[in-house]
Structure formats: C-alpha cells, structure tokens
Image 1 (cartoon, one colour):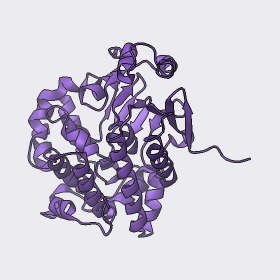
Image 2 (image 1 turned 30 degrees about the horizontal axis):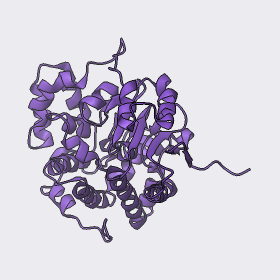
Image 3 (image 1 turned 180 degrees about the horizontal axis):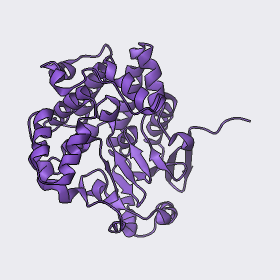
Length: 355
C-alpha cells in the first residue's frame, strides 16, 4: 500500500487547493514538499482552470509547525551544510513566489503555524486565522534566527512588537496575529468548510477577498486568554527599542510590570548568539526595500548560523533529547564577540539565492 502524498493537490471549480499532508509531524516542511508546492504553483500561474489558490493543512492541529528540523539537525551534525543551504534556497524562493503570485492566494492558518509555516502563509494575499491559531517565529529557542521572510513581517509590526516576538520566540493568537500584521481575517474553524464552498461557488460578491470578508468576525478572547499583545506596547516599546540585547534585558528588569520581568527571565535562557544576530536582522529588515532583499539577507545570515554550534545544540535540547537544557556557545551575552552580528549579515553563501 503506497503512502499518501505529503502535499495533496487538487483543482475543482476554479480553486487550486494545496493541503500539507503530514499531520503526525504537524505538517512540517521537507525538501520534497517544497518542490511539489513550487512546481504546482508555477504550473498554475498559466492554468486557466485555476483562478484562486487555497493553502491549508491536514488534521486539526495546524497548518505547518515549520521546517523539518530533524532533517536540518542531521545535515548540521554531519557537516553537510550545502544540503541545508539548498533547502533554504528552495524554501525562500517559494516564499517569494507566494508573495508575488499573480492570482488570489488564500492561506488558512488554522492551528499551529510557525517558522516555515509563516513563510508559506504570511506572504499570501489573503491570510486567515481561527480561534485555534497559534503563530510564532520560535527560532531563538533552537539557537537560530527568524527567516522565511519572517524578519520582513516582524520589522513591520507596530512599535517594537516584532522585536519582542522575534527575540522571545513569543506566540500569537488570532487577534495578536491580526494586530501585528501577520494575518488579515478571523474565521471560526467550524465555518471554514462554508468559506471553501463559497470560494468554489463564487457567490456574490465575487472576488476571493470579498468572499472571505463575508465570514470575517472579531475574535472573541477566551476567558483564560492573556491580554492582547497590543496592550503591552508601553513596556515593550520602551524596552525593546534599546540598541543591544543586554540593554533590553536591563530595561525590562527596571520596569514595574511582572510581564516585563518574565520576558527578561526568558531572554536569559535563550541562545545569546541567536538573540544577538536576530536583533540585528530585524533592525536591518526594517530598512530593506522589499521582501526579496530581506530573503537574501536571511539566506546569508542562516547560512552563517548553520555553521555555528548553537543550532545543533538547540535542536538537540528541544527536539532530539528533549532535555530542554541547551548548552549555548557562547554561554552568555557578555561572551558574544564584538562584531558577531555584522559578520553574520556580511556573510556570502557559496551559492547565491537568486540565479
């Protein structure tokens, strides 16, 4: 009996549907899936049978938990960095293809959507979240830094919210995702089948965005939900506008808010190298002329980061051994050599991102 495809591809009633189909792995992206998605989208650009593209994930747990970091770990510990760079090149080109897609592109971020999942959905023309959505760029937890165009989105969030989300690997619910510019519409998960039916039937009004708007609601916070991120802007903006991570931590510790103190404690558990490079990457992305320039910057930084010890160690601690006790190198922010972030940003990979 043959295995099911890892990406389900279908065309019906003018809707080209791409369903990530690794539900047991929370639909984590691997190289084969990226190839299928890219080749299908390129073919659909000129297919008159496809007038709108829909991206979703199989199962009820999420759209996509990110790239397959077990695969990345294996390449990294074996020193096969060219394989990791090849994965990033293909992934980032796919991110750009989605951002520039000539047909309406609807992404449904129901459930967990993190890392590489943000790269797929965050650049779509129509981005939907539900009451089950949990969005994040959690790279500093594994000694890495945000990529897949994540620094483009993070750098354009209101105030310093994006800097906070990037450094603390913080997650967002539906309302936070809309407030920070990671999503456009909120639709209850139970209503999604009706939305898909409406897209296929082209009910009036006719454009995909107008159809989605018919189902758009205001997210209702759960009783036990934390306060919206936007309500924390006073201390986040005041602290995360500092020039360095140690200064951010110092400001957080001086604030009266308990949440600020918790954020400082969290930062001190994360990769000093990842934090240092992430802050510089988000700041640099804020002045970039466009997404392609940011993807090129991220490619350079990530190609540099995979050759540092923290990535393998972070994945080991979080995913392989699951002891949650990474031994970072450097072990503290004070030990990160001067000019580290500049070296990462100036890195030039052996293979260029764009040909």
